Image (cartoon, rainbow, N blue to C red):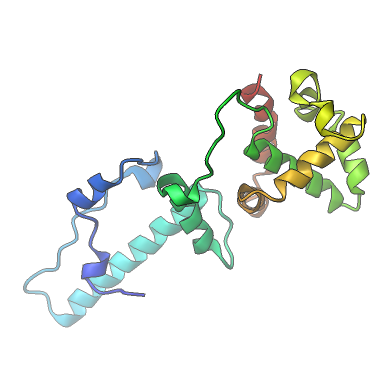
Length: 207
């Protein structure tokens, strides 16, 4: 890692203006850093102390950014952060959306369903029983009503099989691993209630 003074300086205004899509942040992430300047009369020890403070500040901001994207600590944490940022601003990391009527079963909804199914199967419940249980509760019960569930796409008339079909589709999506990491973040930080509220909010977003 390059920890020279030059590499730790903030981006210039011209470089910042190149990025047209700017994510919205709050709290500490929304506060510009103080100007980084080395004193002309500073000795070697003083200079090293200033640079060490810059490194510590950068690391703390990166960890705060991981929390913002709900990325749990552990191996691959910073790789997941890089992906999250790339998907916001770099075209090749974004999936091209098909034009037409919006789908209730969007990628995010499918991936959240997959996580909910796996929460049950990790408790020793079979996948079939897990989908049967979820098919009877919100928000999934509502997704199986009306045009949100097309029986023509599912070989069985069993609503639980419709959820199983969505689960299989979710495991093939790029968003799948990121959604699982988001859930793990809530597990690590003991904020499962926030995840549960997000799951129930899916119904409101699609009605």
